[in-house]
Image 1 (cartoon, one colour):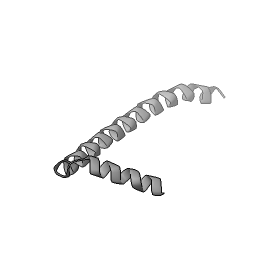
Image 2: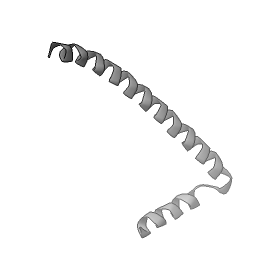
Image 3: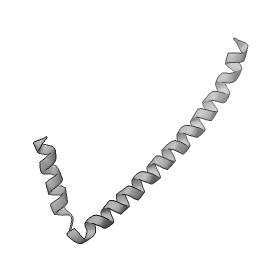
Image 4: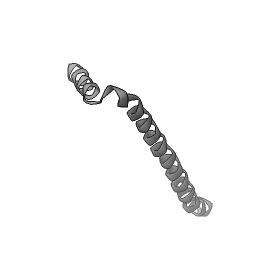
Length: 60
């Protein structure tokens, strides 16, 4: 836990004070974008997978 704490202190001191808020917003937008893309990909893959298993299930 101490190593993680020290790492956070190093990250905080490496970022200039005026840019911390801007970096936080940029990271939040980036994470939101990744989440949206992941949900879209999972939805598309799920629909394709489901359409392939339906004929198999009907045959059984």
